[in-house]
Length: 112
Image 1 (spheres, helix red, strand yellow):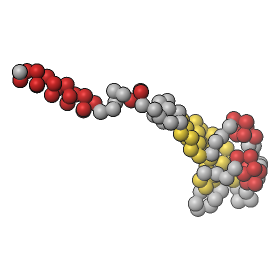
Image 2: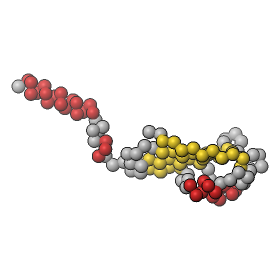
Image 3: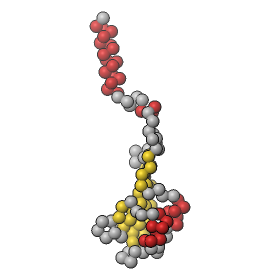
Image 4: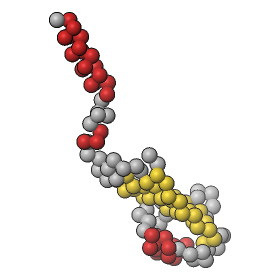
């Protein structure tokens, strides 16, 4: 009698301690897109020597700007599709004092 009760308790504790990790693949995870959506066509339009107004016309306003000088703009796009790893794309634009684009850095990451 105690053997069966002990077995049931062990099985229940094992299931409870595993939590939802067993069911993780069956749980719905919505697709989450955050930030500035960057298409390859729009990023390819960006060239050194362009003005800040031209960049805003193509990409929209940046997600983050450098708080001290305002001459570095960050366009960040983060995408989480269901159970897939999180993808993050960062476009960093550096401007001179006249607002002319001097440097472009485009970086793609897989986070998880």
